[in-house]
Length: 147
Picture 1 (cartoon, one colour):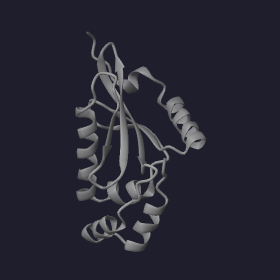
Picture 2 (tube, helix red, strand yellow):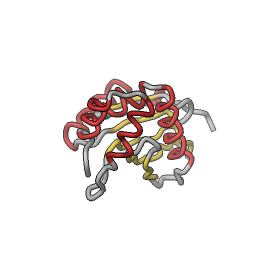
Picture 3 (tube, helix red, strand yellow):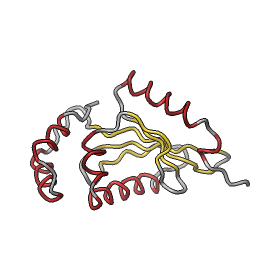
Picture 4 (cartoon, helix red, strand yellow):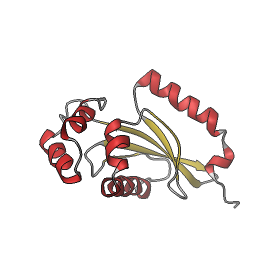
């Protein structure tokens, strides 16, 4: 079987436009991560709490990568995996397969489930532990969508 790279099989610019349109229509953040090297292929609607805080801090970003890896490792064929990341947000991973080869993962998230109130004390402690500006961090938390 010939090894494929996801980005070699799709028009990434067009896929980015589709991701952005999907986000505008649904409000659900979306990303596609390469299964080989973990690079971000496309993304739309990613939350400030992730982009400005978690993924901008090396220690918090390590937890993001561990959570992405957990989801990737727990994908069963074409079965999605929902997971609450170590930074306290939900993601759903869906494998993208070509000829049975897992090339990329479609991620839906970051979000909270309806009826699940975020544990503000957890996020306050997390802001303090990573040295984030508490006010800005909690404001970003309040903008995370609920589905």
